Amino acid sequence: EVLYDVCKLNILNTVYWKGDSMDYFLAACIGALSSILANKSLAVYNDGFRPIFAEYFNGGIDRKGLAATSFAVSFGLIVGFGFTNSIAMGIIIIHTFLLMGDIIGTWCPDTKTGTILSGVIGAVYGILVVAAMSSINSFFQMLPVNFLGSLGNVSTIVVATFSVFPVIAVGYQHGLKKGIITGVITFVTYLLIKKFGIISIGDVAKLSLNADGMAMLAGTLTMIFFGASVKDRASADEGISNMFSNNVERIKKSWPLFAVMGGLISAAAATLLLTSDVISGPLALNGQYTEAALVALVRAIGYIPLVYTTAIVTGVFSPAGSYFVIAVGFFAASFGLSPVVLAVVAFVAGALTVILETFVLGSIGKLLDTFPALREMGDHIRNAMSQILEVALLVGGFIASNSIMAMIGLGYVGSMAVMVTWMLNKTAKKPFLIPLAVGPVVTIAMGILVNLLFLIGFPLVG
Image (cartoon, rainbow, N blue to C red):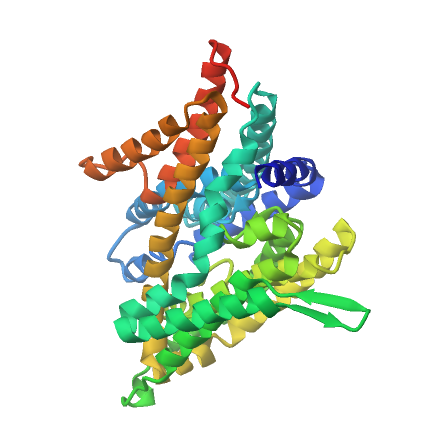
C-alpha cells in the first residue's frame, strides 16, 4: 500500500505539478475574475460572508467594514485549509483561489479603477499560487528523505469517510431514528457496490462503479427524500423567491460573467489544476475521473440549499455556482481528449452549466419555499461536512505523521506531535490553527523535522 502511494505521487509529480502555460493562464483568469466579481458585489465564495452583503447594501456596514470582514472570515481558511490541503493532496483546493478573490475584491475600491485593480491583483495572485505550489513540491523532492508518499495519507481517511456526511446531516435535522435509517442505506449501498459494482457490457466495455461515491449518492437521495417530506403550509407569496425577486434578477443580468467564470473553473478541474473538495481531487489524480465527477456531483446537489438560498436573499451569487462545474470538468476529463481540446470542451460545458444555474435560480427558490426542510438542509450539510473533515483530517494526520517519523524509528513522535498540537489549539484562548488545518500542518512539519533529524545522524529504518 505504501509503495502504491509513493508510485501514485511520483506520477502526480510528473503530471500535475508541471506548472505549464495552461496552468498559469487558467489560474490568472480565475484569480482575476473572482476578484472582479467580489469587487462588483456580484459573487463571493465564502458562504458565511455572503449574508453580510445584505447589510452592506442597506448601509449598515461600510466598505472598510466589508473588507475587514472578508479578511476575518476567509484568510484562516486559505492558509489553514486551502494551502495545506493543496500541498498534502497535490491538487489545488478551489478555496485557495476564490477565498482570496473575496478578500482582494472587497479590499479594492468600489470604482472602475478599483475593479481593474482587483482584476490585476487577482491575476498576479493566481499565478503566484501555481508558482508557489510547484516550488514547494520541487523543494520537497530535493530533500534527502522524500516524505511525499506518506504525506498523501492525510487525505486517506477523508476519502474513506466523507460519503457518510448525509447520515450526520439527517441525524442533526430529523433526529436519530432517520439518521440511523440513512446510515443503514448508505452502508448497504456501499457493500452492494463493492460486491457487484463492476458491470461488463459484453466484451466491449467494463463499467466500474465507485462504492464511496454511490454510497454517498444513496445517502444524499435519502436526505433529500426526508427533506421533501416536509411541506410548507404557508402561502407561496410569502416565499423567499418572491420576497427577493429583485435579487434574482440582479444575478440573472450578470450571466455572461458567471458563464466565463464557470467555464474557467470547469476547464481547471478537467486539467487537474483544482478541485472543490478533498475527496474528488485524489480520485481524479488517480485517473478515476468518472468517480471523481460523481463525488463532485453529489456534493453540488447537497450544497444547492445553502448556495441558492443565500444568493436569493442577498443578490450575491457564488463564483462557482453550486459546484456543478467541477463535476462537469472531471466528467470531461474521462473522455481522454488532448489537453487543449479538453480545456475548450470543459470550458463550454461549464459555461452552459452556470448559465442554466443562473436562470433556474428563481425556480429552485420556489421549490425550496415549498419544501422548507430542503432549504434548512444547507446548514446541516455544511455542519456535517465540516465535522467529518475535521475528524478525518485529524486521524489522517495521525497516520501520516506516524508514517513519516517511522522512517527514522520515531513513529510515536509523529502521533504525539499531532495530539499535542490539537489539544493546545483547543485549550488556547485564541486558537492558532483552524481545526481542519491541524492534521495537514503537523504532517508537513514532521516531514521537515524528519529531514533535519536525518541530517544530524538519525538513520533511516528499513
